[in-house]
Amino acid sequence: METTMYDVVVIGAGPVGENIADRIVQGGLSAAIVERELVGGECSYWACMPTKALLRSGTALRAARRVPGAREAVTGDLDVAAVLRRRDSFASNWKDDGQVSWLGQAGISLYRGQGRISSARAVEVTGEDGATVSLTARHAVVIATGSGALVPDIAGLRESAPWTSREAAAATAVPGRLAIIGGGVVASEMATAFTGLGASVTMLARDGVLPMAEPFAGELVTGSLQDAGVSVRLGAEAASVKRDEDGTVHITLTDGETIEADELLVAVGRTPNTQNVGLDAIGLTPGAWLVVDDTLRVVGEEGTPIGDGWLYAAGDVNRRVLLTHQGKYQARAVGDAIVARAKGEAVEDGRWGRHAATADERAVPQVIFTEPEIASVGLTAAAAAAAGLRTRVVDQDLGAVAGSALHADGYRGHARMVVDEDRKVIVGFTLAGPDVAELLHAATIAVVGEVPLDRLWHAVPAYPTISEVWLRLLETYGR
Image 1 (cartoon, rainbow, N blue to C red):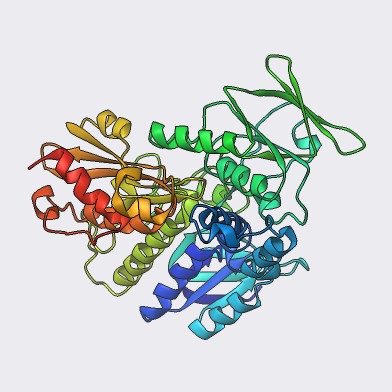
Image 2 (image 1 turned 45 degrees about the vertical axis):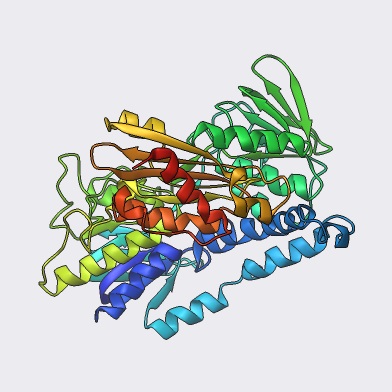
């Protein structure tokens, strides 16, 4: 078998893998990328882009209906077919021609097929036709294969052909009745989207709605879903599932109650796509999450890098943060770290160093595109307390801010900042309300930059905007 050599081989051509390979090439090294599905990965075709496209039309309609003058101009409900067509366009109609073209322009070699590590720095790629090619990396192999939907061991569930996030994102029709197992981000966003598209939705939220967010966020989203007609069953747990010959799904709960639906979405978590990447060939467990150091090198049980540090893992597979933008952040760090090591340059792996993914620890931004939107960065109040920080929590009714009242009649929302009292810096910030997503980056900068509260008093928010919430929070905190 002929072997082709590159400086770096990346397994997985999602947004994380693409960014890694791009940084490698920009650093003057050669890179090959291996992909068994579509170049562009989960985010491009089954997650970020198509799901937010499904949600956006409903958000825009609700926004218009909140403002007199615009409200009177709105007639009718969503055009479902138009929404689905727009969603298809943002998923590039599930074709990756554009992404493949970009790889070529960037000077990155693409290999289609399943990539498996066969030994140190060696990757075998098996194409759909069964043909195998062998790649060797001079410096590093990076696993960036992402994660897949977790389907729990509920009796009859797999046999009932449930939807996962992929099927929901790519649905060609809106079911009359949709049941959802789960109450997290995917469950809440898809309940919002499909209710807006006309489905009758039932959520089985065993652990509550958005349980990892600040409690007020889950409460506001729960109330909004219920107002929209969603049956939110807090604490409900599925015991078994069965799909009839006519397609009806029957979900039996642990208390004996049965719920019927036309489709069932399972959204209870993720599992790493590491089952078939050859981990067993290098002494690691197939299907396991990969443990990494701050420069994303895979480490063994003893905490030291595998071999001489040739193996890296970025994105979902290392379980640090399962968010696309955070994976791309890791990609920039790991790509530059590999280049630095290959050239014998210094590696800045200290806290907030160029080659360290420090933000994964306590400065992760996230937007949940529900009604209302939830935007957060850093630690929740509970997480900060669990971390042993001495904190003060400051809350503000977002609807009482002048800019909010102008933004929409009856604006409802809430803001919270969590202050580390010993350092007088913000370590957590959460916003809940219509259109708060675009306010988040200011909070992210404050958290990452560890900007002292005394300095934040000099960051004057423009009036009248919703950003005035910053002034109100500081006034409540006091000087």
